[in-house]
Image (tube, rainbow, N blue to C red; front, top):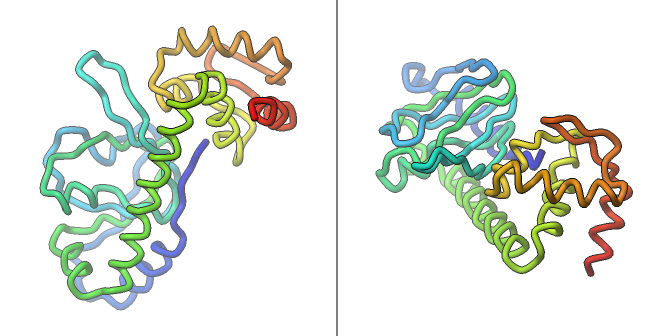
Length: 216
């Protein structure tokens, strides 16, 4: 998967937590696979910083279709945009694995913003990186054929593991699974996959690299 991590922010927050006396304003939480940390449309209550596991952030439209924004791992922060903008939760955040996280109160989050310049800098860097990733993703989805977009996303998805969920891939590309399957059938004829099931793909990284290069 295209999983984002932020070890610097996690290290710094660990340091703040160790020195902090606001024991009632921050706690450690555990979420099981499939459990929601944040629900789209709800009023934000907390900010979370992931200390373990992987989550999926996605928006569900009125027609029931979902669009995956990010896959996030250790050190990534959740819910900070809503507190900064004063809006309801933009997306749902669901645990793809068992997850551990710091749960931080709104008051403590705002006090960190006011009193911790280094925390501010790390948070701004994170927000800038997310904006940059979104722009890059939009560019190759708009400029190149959908087959190339799928190849690029598969390359990123399989950096950490060879197998990828078809549903997560379709949601990330904002296309129906049926449309994805038609394109995958064409790519399969080019020996891209070493194994396929109804729900998952196992990709040949060597062949994937060759096909991406062929587009340039």
